[in-house]
Length: 160
Image (cartoon, rainbow, N blue to C red; front, top):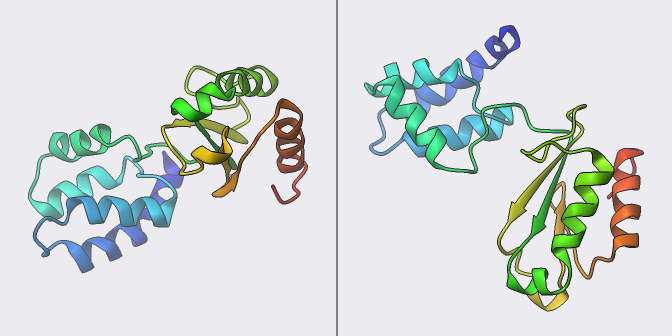
């Protein structure tokens, strides 16, 4: 991807700082994702060369850990809890509501890349189930109506 080359200065800066540190692969991947929002494919050969690893080894670590992204993130990230407490309070119905309303694909992404729904298994708000994080902000005791309101506010550019 041509725009991935824009991330090369960031990647090279991180590699220069971390490549000689033992066990640096995960910290490097985390730093790149934090800086770029995802791990661009252009980073894999750069990391492999800097750490004297194969590209397959680097790609294997990226694919093993589910928190690493290989595509740019959506504008809004929704993290809906599906742990036992939230499920018992209706989080499954809220997930279905979101998927239908936002026309999400099997990966939980909207076609316009504005929204991504991720399933998580505990946001630490079990006493206030069901819970969801929207762009890093926790919302609890969700109802279908409250969820619609929050999503509407996000899509309209308001604080959510």
